[in-house]
Length: 610
Image (cartoon, rainbow, N blue to C red; front, side, top):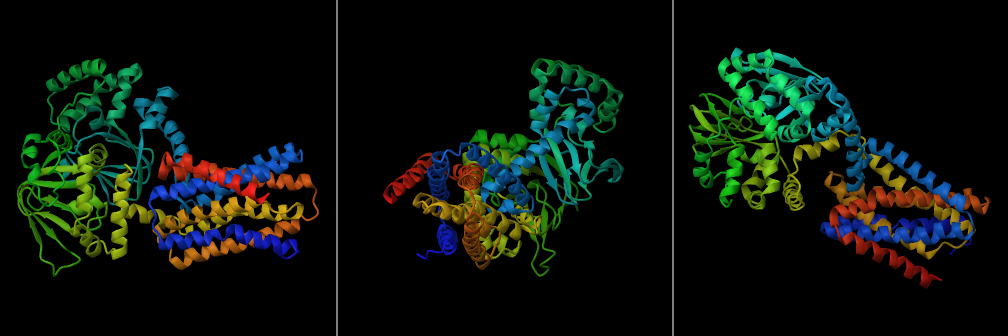
């Protein structure tokens, strides 16, 4: 080895980081299961942790530089967190699953505070104390609707209250030839009359631009009624208001005597049971569905369900009547509901493939099942050839049941593996064969982990929203490596580099590159770009190590300890914020033993090295 500390530092920097391109190459040739990646990541975390304790923390304490250790570690951690946030906000969070999870978690925390304050704009919650508003805000779910989306239709169940955060919504009036009834924008609330009376919607809500909405599910709202006299009093006053009575009479078709009777019963039940009695029940035809559920051939996922599971589905269905010529959906519309024909006929038309003959659907057929399951936009038109009657299953109800029923989960997995679904992705959604296979694999993996089926549109939109993501990801990866590179350079000056530190860095970099390369590959990064990213990081790590040897050539030992402690603080933050959370998310309890094994491996290497 050359006596030049600059060259020595450069070579050691290259050695510590050469496991990065090695890990990326491995990711391109090998597709390990999640638990394997979790084991390697946790092993690398344990190895790096031991190296930091032995070399950086240990050397500072041996020299009596305790103040430098404390101050440096805190500065390193704070600086890393600050720069990490800047990079992540530019799209760098996409570099690995753990940073992606952390980014969205922090974003959600900020949104939560905005929700708590925003609830004061709703009359019902205006005088509510902060504790109650926090409970309500905790129940809000954020939803995104592209321009032209129908949020709900006439006679849909009113299970949620809607609060617009961004965008615009138009309410259409079926009683006035579907003319606009009201134009809504940011901070406006809609659906409250039907929500607070548990009655079906009597308007149609459509977005006129890309819109973000907070929704409050009724079950979560009802859970608060038994513990909140304030809410019960507000509800009672609302039910007795003239506006509510006019709504029930004009929109729901109730006579005044029935309205007064409902208010009396609803108030009694609310105080006694903490639930809202429906003023008008939603039409469902449960028994008729149960009789034909196992005969549905185009979407045979109900065939092997137990009776109580079919009953759960039947209770979430709504029954609708459609006139001849009714358009169920058209190309580019979001698929948010599945139609099941009970009576009548529906024709499927292929506007983009006019040479393809229309498909005629009859009773016991489903309409839109492929786009419904994949979460893709419709690519065909569905039109009623006759008067049609049938059931509607909404996407959010389907997703909830999918997580609750193992049998339904298994049935959907079998449906995903059918050739017709891959053919649909290839011919209708213009996926490549590789993309179709990857989506099906991801969908099954997500379901195995207890998560929802991923939408191909959502996944692609995440990347599209961050056009500078490749550069941000590269900067994020570089940022993760800067502390270790400067530490190598600083330690070359004061003493021979510890084998424990070199081994710890090498071992920890490998699973990080392996995991991140899988993530970048899934985001559509080319093999060439991934290899260039990691190879450049390796070279820059060597250069920074050499620069560190120059910068710290003539500085006091306590300053070297300060720099080493800053690096230790930064790397400990990396371990706690990214490496271990990612490992646990993928491997669960395997993380404990693998972290211990990684820690012990560095202890053994350090013992042999001495």
